Image (cartoon, rainbow, N blue to C red; front, side, top):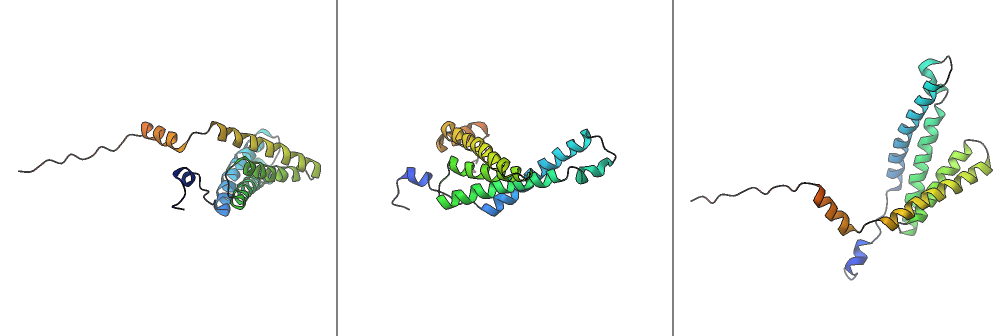
Length: 159
């Protein structure tokens, strides 16, 4: 790689850890699902009390976690296979997550539609981020301006 120009070194693909990303995003999405389940339980009228958080709307937690993990794993796996970071990775991940959301309704047409809609939304989001993205030099300069620099200790000359 030493023969590559400096620009090519900066744009070199770095493989993504698919399982670690899936576990991390799945856990985060599960936490969001738990919050949504708690809100569903609080707003619903039923006689199950706090146990309704898991019994009535607990499937929401699993669905959110599965969608997050499917998105992260698929996006990372596609990126690793293609060795590129672009909007197509987000489209594939969004499609996987949308398909799972559609399967919850037990309808293949809804699953395919959800795949198309969420895939298109994530692809658009990723593509817009690539267009508006800054170069690494601009990001580093912004970071240096934002964070304070550590003052250097003053050394006194002893006589």
